[in-house]
Amino acid sequence: MLKRTLFFGKKCYLYIKNNQLVYKIKKDDNNEEEKRFPIEDLGFVIIDNMQITLSMPLVEKLIENNVALVFCDSKHLPKSLLLNLCGNHIQSEIFSHQINAKLPLKKNLWKQTVEAKINNQMLLLKKLGKDYIDLLEYKNSVNSGDSTNREAVASKFYWKNLFSHIEFKRDVEGDFPNNALNYGYAILRAAVARSLIGSGLLPTIGIHHSNKYNDFCLADDIMEPFRPFVDEIVYNISINNPNAKELTVDMKKSLLELLAEDTEYPNIKRPLMVGLSQTTSSLARCFCGKDKKIIYPELG
Image 1 (cartoon, rainbow, N blue to C red):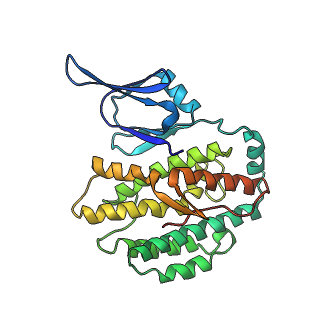
Image 2: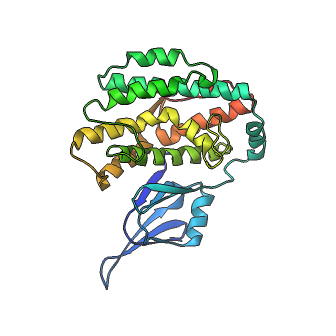
Image 3: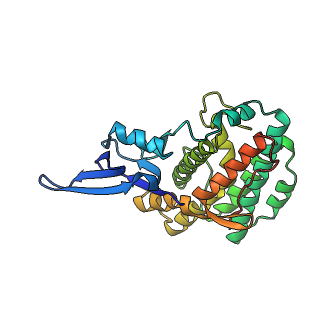
C-alpha cells in the first residue's frame, strides 16, 4: 500500500484523536479549519514552519506506525528526521549480521551500488536525449569497492551533460537548482532511512560511508542509485522555470511526488516508496548470507 505524504507549511496545531492526525488552523478570530488523516495511511509527515505545534501523543503514535517525521529549518530545507528504532521482529538478528559483515562483502555491495547509480544516470541522460555513452564504460569498469572511484568520474561527466542548458556546478551551497537537489535528496534520504529500519537494518552502519558524525551512513549508501529519480524532477523544474532562484511551494510539491514515482524492478513496476522496501529487504538478505545481490530499480 502506498502511504501518504503530508506537508504542513502554515502555523497550526497537530494532535491525535480517534487514531487520526488532526490538523487545526485558525482562519480568523472566530473560525477554525480542521482536517483529519488516518494514521495508518501515512508514511511521511513534513513540518515546514517554526510555529507548528505537535502533541507528544501524536508523535508517539506516528513513530509506532513507522511514519517518518521530517523537520525543516528556517531556510525551509529538510534538516532532521525522527524514526522508529524498532521496525522489524527479527531486528537483533539482522543487526548482528550487519555489524559483523566482512570487508569483502561490503566492497561487493558497494560495487553493485555504484554500478546501479551510474546505470540510472546513464538511463536519465539517454531519456533526455543527451550524451551518455561514456557512462557505459564507467559502469562496466567499476571494481570491488570502487577502488578506482568510477563514481566520481561518472558524476563529473553526468552533471556536465545533465544541466548543459544552464551554467551549473553541483555544490550543496550553490545557486538554484542546487537547493532543489538538496531538498529532493533530503526527502529521499528520509525515505531510505525509514525503509532500512523497516527491514531491520541499522541506518548508522554503512557499507561505504563511515563518517563518525553521520547517523545515516547506510541510508547515504543505499540512496545513491535513487538520486537520478530526484535529478529528473529537478531537471524538469529547471526547464519550466528558467529564471528561478528560490524554491516555491509548487516546486516542493513536485519533489514530494518523488515518493510516488514509478520505479522499474525486475518483472514489476512499483512506486518508489514501496519499491524501497524491496531494495532494503534484499540488502538485509545479503547481510544474512541468504542472497548476494541488492535489488535496485532502473529509471524508466
